[in-house]
Image (cartoon, rainbow, N blue to C red; front, side, top):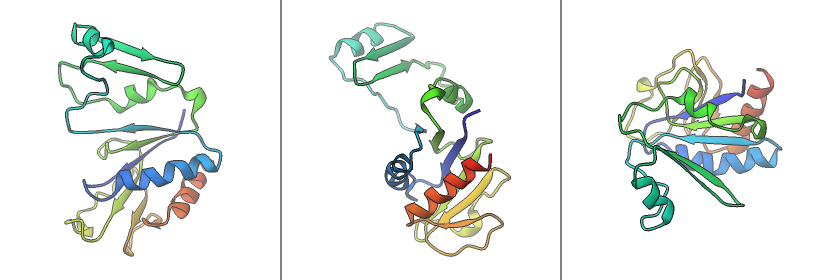
Length: 168
């Protein structure tokens, strides 16, 4: 099974900022990461007025838009049920990936690196350090039972991820 590693934290802690530097570093090291990003906001990856948008809005339950550069699958979920992470991972082409990084989904039962940033409006005592937490990345020293990584050191975090994958 492909390794799944969530980057979990409160909003404003720097999940996206970390991933924007971490993904290219993992690629530079020869790893092929996939990404699933959770959002609480309404979102649309299509453009109003385009044929694909109009056809999807006409009632298609699933729409694939494809070109020579990329393809995207859009699935309508009118029941507004919580997204199932396992299902989303199963939709990815595991032959082209070495790892699936997940932004968010902090309550899922998957391995995760929890982020903490001083000044984010939260206290260290609020961190949820369950049995799925494999490391904490922080901009301050934290005494925890898992490795504590420097949140501002992408190379250190990438080193940890490489070792974590190798140990699986």
